[in-house]
Each structure stands twice: as structure tokens, then as C-alpha cells.
Amino acid sequence: MTEQPFVEVYCKDACPYCEWATDLLDSKGVEYELYNVSGDPELFEEMVERANGRETAPEVFIDDELIGGWDETHALDEAGELDHKLGLAVADGGDEAVEHRKLLIAGTGIAGLTAAIYAARSNNEPLVLEGGEPGGQLTLTTEVDNYPGFPQGISGPDLVNNMKEQASRFGATVKNGVVESVDDTTRPFRVELTNGDVYTADAVVAASGASARTLGIPGEDELMGYGVSTCATCDGAFFRDEEMLVVGGGDAAMEEASFLTKFASTVYIVHRREEFRAEDYWIDRVQEKVDDGEIEILRNTEVTEIVGSPEEGVETVSLVRNPEGHPTERLEDSETETFEMDVGAVFLAIGHTPNTDYLADTGVELDDEGYIVTKGGKGAGQTATDVPGVFGAGDVVDFHYQQAVTAAGMGCKAAIDADDYLEGGGVAERATGEAAAAESDD
Image 1: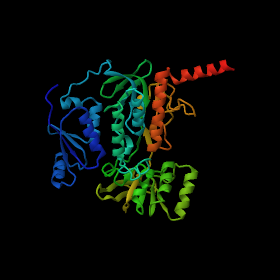
Image 2: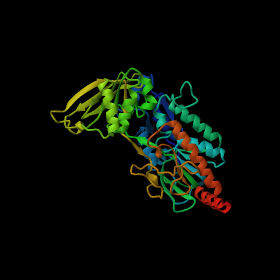
Image 3: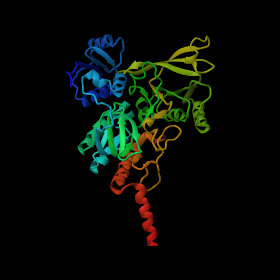
Image 4: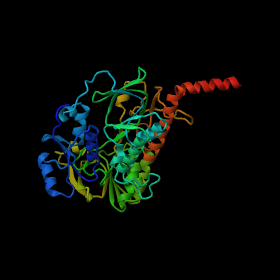
């Protein structure tokens, strides 16, 4: 290994992306200087100047070279280039496995960590890979008030970190890494990561979650968890009596807008087209609330910027509107109107993308949206897939409930199903044997 370069990280308080970046460096055993710009205007200005005007955190530098924020740092790691820059020994990317594990769990959200806790307690010594969003979507939630056992609430990052510690205490190993592919044509399974590392495993739990789609507009990332949210059920109550804005036109947007009327002074639904994609049931429910003055619909409208700060939350949003719809595609049109609104919270309900690309070439059945199809039912093996030894849990399976507590329950089931498979030669084989035994008793 060559001499380590000088690594610097500018961060902010309560910033999950900053934590992801430092966790990544920690996992590699890299030393770095950490500069907290919160409450330090001079240090903040220094960061902005060095980062070519960017005001976001984290900002990572290696030997004075700007690497960028979490997305850029993570992308370099996925491409196998970050280790080069850090002066670390680089794997040759060959076929030789780094190590073998009885169980590999993809994802460190609530489902993956619950599976890790149960699997570790069953002496299956799971390897848990963090993925591109360590801790999952819950790390973007500042307060979790609906997870059982925390009467005063708990922050999303704290809940995730507590579960990591719990899993590690029982023998789970948590590592940074993104699964690139799973080869299910061989046993043990061959699991390759995006950085070229290869592991083998007797069983795999896919708990890689589903990433909420975002708009990609200024202010969105900086205010995620500070007035910008992808979960009304999680965060709606924190903005009681505020005016709230929901972006979207499908069932999720209608449902979230209806839910938010419990707390908001007014809910605005912003949709880029005239017609909604939602089912008539939800459109009718929303219309009732429109008639009651609880919801206002802004059709043919898009949000272009969210203004505020982590300290003060969301203050205003900038929008554009055109009678033909899709106004951001018609900014030069004379009929396109630009305006601003004062709101206290913005909820994004434009869908989720399941993180299942690594299963595309396997025998695991995926639905049209890419979610894993599991066996379900009432007995054992509910989380089993069409590939014996591969199990699914959490938001990568569940596109309806998408709650931390339901993800935990499914993670528990997946660990138990995987243990049954490892101990008994597979759920399907055991079920066949039980059926044969029952017939012999008749």
C-alpha cells in the first residue's frame, strides 16, 4: 500500500450524506480531517470557495483535489477508482472470492438489519452489505415517532445505528459495498460487487430497498429531512398547521395529500399535467377535500426550486405553470407563468424505484416495476423467491405499506426462512417431505 494522501471532509450537523461519506472512509481504515461547517460562517465560506461555489455537504477532498459530495464519492467507489485515489491496495477484480459466508444480506435498512440480528443470533454469521444508501430511506427522516418502543420518538439515523450495533453484537459483519450481480447458476451463490470484490454465500437475503424518486431541483437534497420528505406518514405530523405541498399525480400523491389534511392548514397538490394518473377512488376522495377547502390542486405546474435551510426548514418554493402542461419543457413559451409560494413542507410522491438490477439475470421473479415477487402465504417460506436460497424483504418487495415496522417484520421472516433453508436443505424440500409424511399417515 502506498502512502495515504491527505483526506479532508467538510460536513454539517444532522447530515445523513455526511455520515455515509465518513462511514465509507472509516470502513476503508482511512484517516481524514473532519471540518464541521455548521455554525461556522468562515469555515462554510472556505468550503464553498474550495468546492467551486457548491453549498452542499459533504465535500470530500483528496490531496486538495475536489472529489465532491456523497454521490460523487460513492460513484468513484463503485467504479473501483476511490481506492486508487486513497492509495489503497486494489483488488484485481478476478474470479477468486474474497470470502465465503453462510448468509449474505444486501442492504442495511430496517429490513436488512432486522434480518441480520435474527440471522446472527442463529449463528449464521451474516455479511451485511450497506449498498448505495446506507441505512435506507429512514436515514433521511429526522424524527421517527411511529416505531414501537420509543415513546419520545427517535431519529431515523439513530434507529439505524442502534440496529447496526445490535446486529454487530450478535456477530453480523457490516461492510460498505453495492451488489453488482448474483450468479444463481452455481452453489454457493457467487456475488460480485461493483468494486470488483467477489463473495460466495449459501443463501442471500435481498433487502436492498426501493429508492424514492426525486425531482433533481435546487434545494431538494439540502432540505431532505428538514421540510422535504418522501413519506407523509412518517413526517406529516411535524408540520402541523403549516401549508404543505405534495408533488405527484398518482395514487401515492392523492393518498398522501388526503392524509396530510389531518395536520395541514392547506394542502396543495402540484401536478405537471392536467389529468391525474390516480384511480377514480382517490381522485374522488381528493375532490371531496377540495370541495371542503382542505386541498387545492395546481395542475400543469412544476416545482423548480425549494428555498430554505436546515435550521429554518422550507420557506418558499418556485414554480412554473403552462396551460399545455409540462411547463419546464416550455420555459420560453409566453404563456408559461413563474411564481412563488410560501409553504412549510414539501412531500415528493412521484414513485419509487426498487433496487433490484443485480437480480435481473437470475431466476428471481420481478414484477413489471422491478419489485421482487415472493411466495407469500401463511406458513413457512413466505419470503422465498423462485430461486431456492434467495429471499426478499422490505421495500424491495413491499410497494404498498413501506413502513419501518413492516420492513422489520419481513426482515425477521426472511432470516427465519433463510435459517430453515440452511439447516434443513431448503424450505421447498422440507415441505415436500412433510407432505409425503402426511400421506403415509393416512
